[in-house]
Amino acid sequence: MSSLTLLEHYARRLPLTEGRLASLSADEIAKLRQLWRLLLSEFDTAAPLPVLFSLAHAPASEHDTEDLAALSFEPLVSLGSKPDNDNGATPPRTTTATTVQATPARDAGSGGWLSWASGSRSSPSSSSGISTPAPIGDSAETLRLRRETVQEYIHRTDPATLVAPLVPPSFTPLFGQPALARSFSAAFWQAATQMRDPDAWVLRFLRARKWDVDQALDMLRKTLAWRVGQAIDEVAYFGESKLHHHTMDTGLAFACTTDRLGCPVYVVRVRANVAHNRSILAIKRFLCWQLETSQLLAADSDGRVTILFDLSDVTRENIDLGLVRMLITLLSNYFPETLGIMILYVNSWFFWGLWTVIAPFIDPVVKSKIVMVRATREITPYIDLDRLPLELGGQKPFSYSYIQPTTEENACMADTAARQAAEREYVSAIADYECATRQWLAQQAGTDDFSSAPTRCAARDKLREAVVELDPFVRSRTLHHRLDQLRPDYTVAL
Image 1 (tube, rainbow, N blue to C red):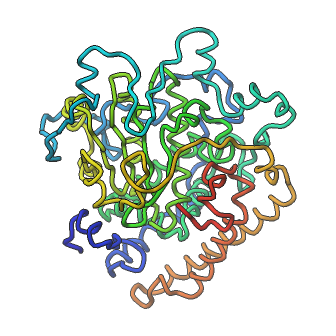
Image 2 (cartoon, helix red, strand yellow):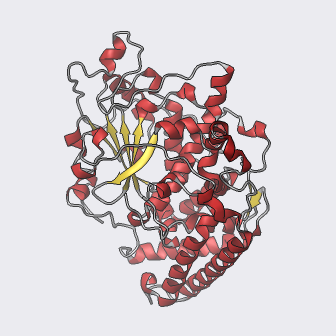
């Protein structure tokens, strides 16, 4: 077990290896074997999981909900609610002060709390030139814009695109599954094969539950039930075409670089967020899509990403606790071990006051990954200056501009014969991997190193190749593809 702090890992550029492939102890390998046995049993016995919020088949009224609870099967009462609380009770509120130690400093004339307190309600312009979007308003036209998807926007502004949708509308689940249900095994493989090695995905649940196999299995069950319920495979299939255009166009959140440990960095420009400008559903779907897509960019960092919240020049209308609550819930309950660190870049007195309200409700594990900084020089221990975007005081010439999707980029999704051929290879590769895993489990513990077992390694590599071949048929192309951040061979260039 490493005695290094997270900061020391970044200072020395030492990747986190504890509990990860190629660095597992004998006891950790035994736990992994135990969990795989339980999973294979679940494949044979688990009941089908229902799709609750289908994009392709549910009535429109079900998609118009503003109910925040639609995000989860559990009430979202507080940021600190635990997924493994058996009685469903909300943990008692604590007033313990945050352990983050920092004294906010303000430069004269820099806006933030001082400009808000002075009564100014104009949209402030940040040092990067990005201004807070003005609230859209309440007219029939502007209410439509609140919900307008990328597909609807393109059709409205370019009538020539009406002849063809961005993505073929007839979604077909993998493995021949029915429209409104998925088997446990189908849901598992759709999620686990996003990683280069399915073992890496399984290990995330063991680490998240401190190597308690039963709790890890319970968390995995809940994650798969949530993924099927929220139709995450459909979210990936329809992609940006079903996302809120205003949110995509203003650049609320985007990946643009890597940190010192090679994790993708997502910048969240809080000043670009005005809750009145979009619906709860819009931000829920946006966050689910971003986190799901992040796993493609994080293939070299074991699925971990860094989230940098740019809180410069925020005002009251930019702060959305519902959004924060959604993100914390997703990361804590359904995307375990995805958050590497969360950097809060704060130059606003207003946020410091709000932080004292938020901090007690944040899960301690998540809070331990939060770093608060007040200047560019305090970000550089985590992200090198030449990797930090110009708008954050760095040297990387990246400027967000939304490149809209086209029908042509997803043309192969309509090629049914090619998709069927790719899916057959995928199903065959999964069968080979399952067979190799059963053989590995049948061997006496300790007689081999699972990471170098030749049959299982070959099956893993074949599965990865099949995933890459199938992906363009089941996932619409993303902004990352258009920016050449994600290459056809699935190498990443951030």
